[in-house]
Structures are given as C-alpha cells and as structure tokens.
Image (cartoon, rainbow, N blue to C red):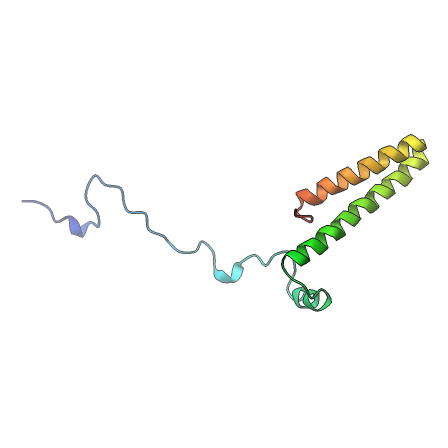
Length: 109
C-alpha cells in the first residue's frame, strides 16, 4: 500500500522548496545614513537642496579639505626641508587626504 506523501510536506528524494522568510531584521533598525537623528532637519534648513546638487556641494567641500591638507603639508615640509619639502608636503597632503576621503566615501564621484 503506497504512503500518503502529503503528510510529510514534500515528496521523497526532492529538495525542500526555497521559501522567502521575510526580512532578516526589523524595519525600525534600518540604517539611517550619515546624518544622526534630529540633524537631518537642521541640515534641510541650513542647506535647502537635495539630490545631485547636495552631492556636488559636499564634493566641493571635500575638495577644499584636501587642498587645505595639502597646504598644511606644504608648510610643514617647508619648515623641515625647504623648497623640496614644500613640494613634497603639498603632493603628499593632497593625495593622501583625497584618497582617504574617497575611501571613506566623503567624496563620491
């Protein structure tokens, strides 16, 4: 007499079906981005632009941070090694700061 396979939930010799189990985390634990709670509203008042204009603004701010880091490196290099140190400090400051800001995604191209 054959068995009733419906009691087991699947036929023998077959893999169980892959069912979607839902979200792996609760909806209230979504990452909120770089802006902490409360500061998003302040940023919207101070910087009233969104999307690509906002990204372009922060990319320009990041570029200026890299330039200032290069100038600081040039001043430190000038004080240590003179003209050669100033050139090396400028190059090192701009390149290292720019690379660090792109890796940490403060500058997004």
